[in-house]
Image 1 (cartoon, rainbow, N blue to C red):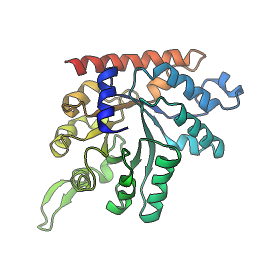
Image 2 (spheres, rainbow, N blue to C red):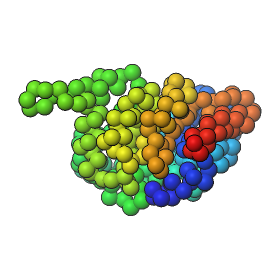
Image 3 (cartoon, helix red, strand yellow):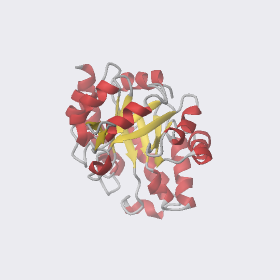
Image 4 (cartoon, rainbow, N blue to C red):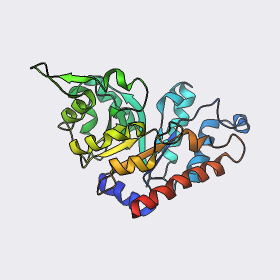
Length: 274
């Protein structure tokens, strides 16, 4: 899915919601465990209940890889089941150099046919470039995450050759990496709990999309994310996972997931129309 198509879906659905499919075999409703593929059945019902309310789905690879080959089968079936008008994100946080990155890119873009993949920038340009060689595919680069440990590196001051503190590490990451691609093939992860930094980030990359996790269970504010982070094209994909997919542990889990997704979508509609 290219940028124009993504923007069209946001406008059509009045939503910039991304549903995170962090599907944990220990948390899904117990009655599904009797089925041959409980992970896929859970995802299928979540997708059926929410696909008209969201513009993207983000399976977190760790939840599938932890189950071995059966989990990867569930992942493959899930990605194929997601409607084509929904943007797909492989939340894999890969990051390596040379042929290794090229193989990761082939895995997610050719085999699974994801629209995008999250990539860690720590190893620099040659760890990211192989992902950017694919037409109408996206790199979503980790910039400023919502976890407590983000302060260990991302918030550190960068010292220039004069010994003067100039900016924070996440700003350096964005300013350097934006030269590798453009706003048609690169997005950035910016946590919702770091909404106060969005204004500064928007000055650096006014036209790029931002993937914003941390709404809901992590306490991020949708209004703050919109206020400080949106641009003329919306420019946001706001992810919610646990508060949607685990809204109920009973047989009504899909119905309750829809209710939670609709609350966010209705809030997004108001913002988009304001």
